[in-house]
Length: 257
Image (cartoon, rainbow, N blue to C red; front, top):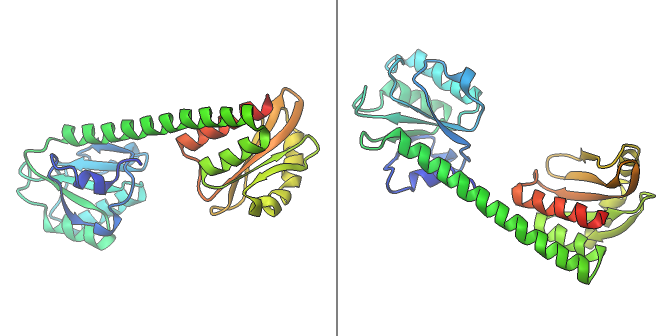
């Protein structure tokens, strides 16, 4: 899994202390970014742990800190790391109160922990998570290939459904369901026939996403050019991760062949 604020706090060499937002430590961290700007929002993409020494902040002004914290939350910043022993010996009360009021995770960074160490820890955790995803994706590819060679398309659909922790269905050129796994998904797959027919009108490869947030379905056409041979539906409760997408792409290639 990707790094979280909790995993960084548990990183013994960083010695981070949680001062606010204890209930939001499971939030994934996309990156660690250092900024001393009073308004760093234009440079945020969302998902960052922002690190600061409050060099340019009016950190003892309650109203200024309320505005600052709200701007960070509005930009999708998942946490604020405040270095003590640099410009302030401790986290100013105004910032602490604002973070607690708005439930922004606030981590106290000791003087002996450089921001670079936090950035490296986040980068290493992201790299490790990506490596695990790629490794799992290649393993899924091998398993799907073995299933295709030994048992055929039905087995590929079944293995794929297991890998994505959801369901999968295979449609023929007419839009009829020819394989589905697990069995309970048969009715859900059949209701997608109109969406499959619309997908067939587009040159392959084509894709579409249908459904809501808790019943998300990705449709992929099978074939090349204008010769659509069928379609694959993959239903999950959340967007596909890296490993799951490797598995889907492998299944598409195998089923197309």
